[in-house]
Image (cartoon, rainbow, N blue to C red):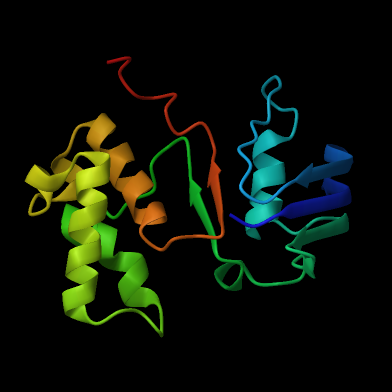
Length: 170
């Protein structure tokens, strides 16, 4: 995992709403960090800025010392799993897992992609569901698909925005 450096990161929305104000954060290479706080304190907004889904009003974001603040989301090598799973319900579990690998210009050939899809399906516990439409799965399994789809591309940074809050306790 890449090192993340955030300096004086600020995000203001229209109407004068300040979601994040001058955040400084250093996440060393290989670390696991949890952002904690009440609803509305800027956790998701911060992750959206790290991933590139939101542009900061000011401040800097660096991965391994490289400026990322103005880099497009697709060029950041960040995997993100949202609280509400974001999967393609009309596609099979297999196709959902393979999607990121297929979308990459330098993606692996079909045989390697198949091996990787099956490996990730094993990790998240979906080997028996690869041929099922994702929309027919339980909420728990849909979230597993979302986790697997982000994991399979081996991101340099892996962001999880409350991915387990809607799952059954078991």
